[in-house]
Amino acid sequence: MSYTEFSRRKFLQYTAFGAIASALPGLSRSEERLINKDPDHNLKADVELELHARTAEVPILPGAKTHVFQYTGKLLKGPTQTIKTLPGYLGPILNFERGQKIRIFFYNHINEPVITHWHGMHVPQKMDGHPMYEIYNGERYVYEFEIDNPASTYWYHSHTHDMTATQVYQGLAGMITVRDAEEQKLALPADDYEIPLIIQDRQFTAGNQFQYLHGMHRRMIGFLGDTILVNGQAGSVIPVKTRAYRLRLLNGSNSRIYKLGWSDGTPLTVIGTDGGLLEKPGTMPYVMLAPAERLELWMDFTGRDIGSDLTLQSLDYKGGGPQMGGMGGMRGRGRGGMMGGGLAQGKAFPVITFNIAEKTGDSPALPDKLVTIKRLSAKDLTHPDKTVPIAIGMRHMTFQLNGRTFSMYDHLDIERIPVDSIQKIRIFHDNDMGSGGMRGGRGMGMMGMMHSMPHPIHLHGQQFQIVSRKQNSSSSAYDTVKEGFIHSGWKDTVLVMPGEEIEIIKPFQHFTGLFLYHCHNLEHEDMGMMRNFEIY
Ligand code: C2O
Ligand code: CU
Ligand code: CU
Image (cartoon, rainbow, N blue to C red; front, top):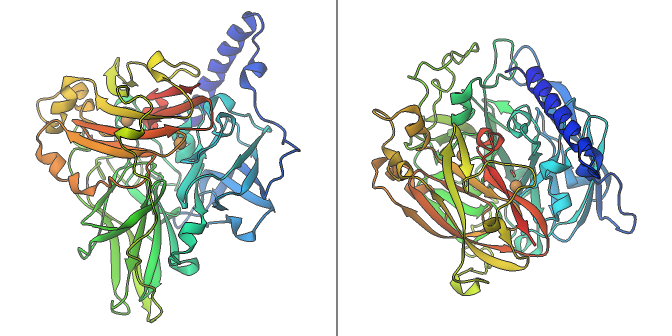
């Protein structure tokens, strides 16, 4: 389906909805949308900025420019470092401080509805970018909220109904950093020594245009491109000095899951996860980074030879779901040949190369303690005997959560959660095939293999902690990923592998209303693998 067809289908859908809505007494489409058009003049903002979603032509590959969607920013008030523009198609990096009151005037100049979500941030429903608030070309949405998240790496992206995958794919995403006093005391590498790494995969046509996937089966697997872009650029090499760096990683891909490791086998030093720094640095052979997850690494290049290279790679792994390459999938028209087949989920490839360019002796030492984290446990639960389910299932060629697909305002009784409570949530596969799914491959039908897909499950609102992780099937595929999960630290997205059952504890404080939870494989999300929690 082309983008135009996509938009047209969308338009027809709206027309149909409009007709139904006007037929219902007292309900019109404009009332239904309740968009926040105007600022609250009583609220004094520390930071004010404009964010525009527009179409643009940007150079990515040599030759023709690429047509993209792009966020651009303009600072109206606040510290000058608030907005940092990146070359390429990604939105600017927004640098905030905990406690700041933020006002963002968001303008949509694209011929599709758009709404923007601040992924990982704890904000009121109206400020969270729920698809019910989408705005049309020429409209404005005013976001006002206070930054109340710990220092970490977050991000923003479009969250439009049915169109999150295509809009993020075309460029509507950017990084957010939050700083706070506890983190500043650590004096971690900053400025030139703090490097954002936004990782995405794309597929290009011979004319350098983004090519999206086609067909139902492709959508069920999710988009997998054969060109890895970091910060919107392909094949770039980052020059570094012989000292320590802070690397902020964001997996901004639609569906690709990375298994990150250094090319020379140096273990990774992890200092932070989605929602904050860890209590202390941890050493891991590799880390799994699923769509929407963030990771902060400490990397010390001290002692390396000038002129030498070190590459962050994605390593081979299994259990990533059906491999389309050999299944007679569609042939990409671009340089990639078989789409996905060229770079299937779980295949190895380089992500980004660092070149040791300059000698220096000013490297800071890795702190052995980072921040204090209040560990959540059973005794913190508001209802110790109650568990909120998130059941991953499949029916009628689509993925479901708790037996349902997304519907704008819909929520079940089990999806109603009292405000200011702390809940245990169990995320699991609600079918037998899921537990045996890691076997994958031969002998299973397409549907069987779809049951063996990993799903990065994301919950809006406050960050959560992982309390247990259980693999219900013994499988050698799981052995290829199991050392790459971080269990300590604050998370808003957790990768649920086939056969896995994960328990988390999550606070639901301060704000009532509808807050989404969904699979962050963006194709799955747009297929309806998303639901609302109603916080009441
Ligand atoms: Cu990254 Cu519902 O969002
Ligand atoms: Cu989110
Ligand atoms: Cu999924």
